[in-house]
Amino acid sequence: MKNHFTKTILAIVITITLSSCSKDDGPSYSEENFMAGFLTNSGFSAVTDATINGGSYEFGSEFTPLVKGKITSLKVKLPATNNALRVTIWDKSTPTATVIRSETVNVTAADTEQGFDIADLELTANKQYAITMNSDDWYNHRRTGNTNATYPVTSGNIRIDSYKWIGGTAQAYPTNIALSYYAGDVSFNFIQID
Image (cartoon, rainbow, N blue to C red):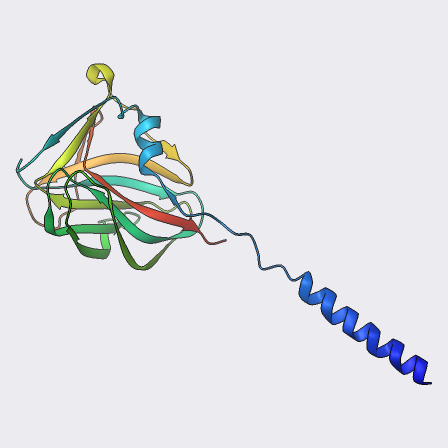
């Protein structure tokens, strides 16, 4: 009887150990940023110049995440410092684009990409969003020969659907499309969550 009891206890311990070791916590995903891949895949990496105090614009990219994920931080690179740069994330799926997050960041160094942690912002797969900034300083990326890019452009799990801009300092959704250049280096870090 003692031997049977010992075998039962041993079987329970082995079962618990095996089930805890084989527990699947799900896949682990790496954080990604679309900017470098976008500039390369669109051809906008060939020629770059900088504009400082060139007039204020709200400009950036319409994009679609190809998987469910979350934005964990913003990335900005400007040719001048700006202690109150407004970065906006829009829900483009509504009839009129809706602001879902607006952050004011302090760009303390020129010509250096800076990251800004934000509260995680969950994005739905295959839903269109936009990220814009309002600035009078920016980098201007063009293709060799000033030819037009073809959208969409995919970089990792983010598809860039278009580049848009509008003049002024208001937090207004950009309505003008540009194909021959990309201005402004504003992006985000993204991580897939399922």
